Amino acid sequence: MGSEHDYRDLNRASPKDNFPLPHIDVMVDNTARHTQFSFMDGFSGYNQIQMAEEDKVKTTFITMCGTFCYKVMPFGLKNAGATYQRAMVTLFHDIMHKEIEVYVDDMIAKSKEGEDHLVNLTRLFECFKQYKL
Image (cartoon, rainbow, N blue to C red; front, side, top):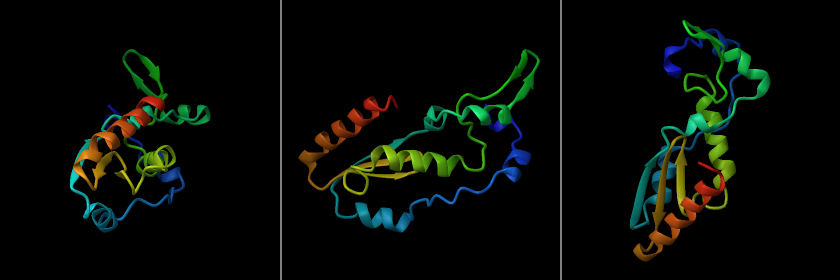
């Protein structure tokens, strides 16, 4: 639904969020010595980041049923990727680069030994549950 709306004017007016996205080659290096991997796609993750109250009005759109605005971050916003990456780094800082790698909405759980993988996945899913993801 987010791609149906035109955010070009809003995106032009928004300052760029320079929060760094991970370098793919660093992520590959960080996972190369591991034997077990689980790949996850957080495709609905954007829709779990609440919009700031003062920014909701900026996402207003009109339909035949009325005027609406987003309560959660829609996908088409200029800084959506950086905002999501910041959230993931904030939530998972204890296990990033050790048990998981995160690139925006893609996540890799990794383990050096096969028997550790279930433990690492359990810890990751406990974080998901704790943060209601």
